[in-house]
Image (cartoon, rainbow, N blue to C red; front, side):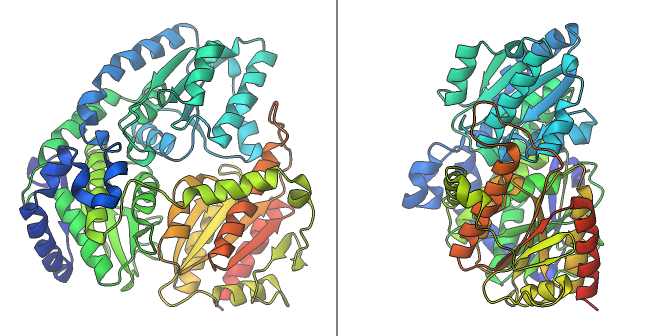
Length: 541
C-alpha cells in the first residue's frame, strides 16, 4: 500500500537523484503545473503543442466523466449472460487492448485479447466456443487494419456457425469514426462512443479500458473510485504530489544521460502493468531525437534492472527493492492516473509534446504499400544465408558469413555505446511464448538494455520511440512461417501476408532512419526458436 494511507505514492530511493529532482519539483510547484494540468490547460507544453493538447486532456477527469458507463456495461453484461454469452474476445491494438489486459489480469477476469495478425493466434481464438462468445471491436480511429481484419474474420465465423453476427459484436470507438457508422448500418449489439478528447495511450479509464474489462467481469466502478482518490493529490501543487516527484525524477535522470526507464514489478499485485506503461512513456516522450525508452523486464533480478547502468533508471512497480532508484505504490486505478500525470509533466520538463505521435504512421504506410504490391511482398527476398531452420536477412555492413552465432555477433557489434537492442517477434504470443526468453538471454550476454515486443503489437506501443526517440537502437526482427493462414474476408490479403508486410514495412522505415535491422525468418518456428536460443547462448562465450 501507499505510505501514510495515501492512495498512491512515489519513493525516490537514490539520494543524488532525489536531490536533483527536488529542485525540479519546486519549480513545478511555483509554476502551478499540476493544478493547471488538472484544469486541462493546453498551454503547458508551449505554443507548438497547444493545438493538440487542447483536444487531448479529458483524461484528467475520467474518474468522474466515465461514471455513466458503469451502469451501461453492467446492463449489457447481464443481458449477454442471460443469453449464455460469457466469453469475451477483444479485438484491439495499443491503447485499446493494453489497459483491459492489465485490468482483467489483475482481477482474474477471463479476457481473450487479439492484438495480433498472427494467423495461428487468431485461429486459436476462433476455436473457442463461439456460442458463448461476444466480440468487442475496439478502435479509436475506426480504421485500424488489424482490428478490422479480426471483425471480418469473426463475422464470417459467427455466420457460418448459425449465429447472428451483429448480435455478438460490441463496438468501442470515437464519435463519427468509420467504425461507428459501420456499426450503426450493420445493427451491431451496442456501440460505446468514447471521449474523443483522450488519446489512445491515456484511455485506460475511458470506454476503451472499461467496456471490455467490465464485460469480462472486472469491477470497473472500484477502478474509478481508486482513481478519484488519487486525483485529489495528483492535481495539487505540493511537494507531496507523487506525480511531480515521479516526473521530476525521470527528467533529472534523463538530463544526466539516463534515457532508459527499466520497469519491473516488485510485488504490486498488478498484472502486466509495465506493458501498459511502456506504451504510455514511449509514445509520449520518444520524439524529436529524445525521450525515455521504457524497458519492461521480468522482475527485479532480471538483466537490465539488477544491473542498470548510468544510461538507465530502474523503476519498481510496487515496493522499493533490488536496484530500484524509484518505486511507485498504489492500487491500479490510482497507478493509471499517476503515470499519466507524470508522463505528461515529464514531457514538459524534457521539452516535447506528450500527446502527438509523429512517426507512427510511417510503418503503417510502408506496410500498405507492400500489400498493394504483392510481387514485392512475395518475391525479391533472397536471404543473405540460411542456417538450418533460420533464414538470415542481414543489414548492410553486417557479414553473413559463418554460422548464425557469427551473424549475431557481427550484428550486435553495431550497437553504439549506451545504445539498446529491440527484439521484435512477429510470432504467436501464446504458442510461441518461449520467444520472450530471448530478451533476458540477450541482455545478459550483451550488456545492452534490451526490449522485447510482439509484432505488430509493439508498433502501437514502442514503435514511435524507435523512429522518433534517441537514435541508438539496433533491431532484431524475428518472423516465422505460419502452419496455417487465414483469409481476411473481402480483402486481397491473408493474415499471414499482412503480418509479413508489417514486419517488412517497419524494417524498411527503421533502415531509412539509419538503424541496423537483422531479420531472422524461422521456416520451422519451434526448431528455429530452439536454434536461435542456442546461437544466443554462444554469443557470450
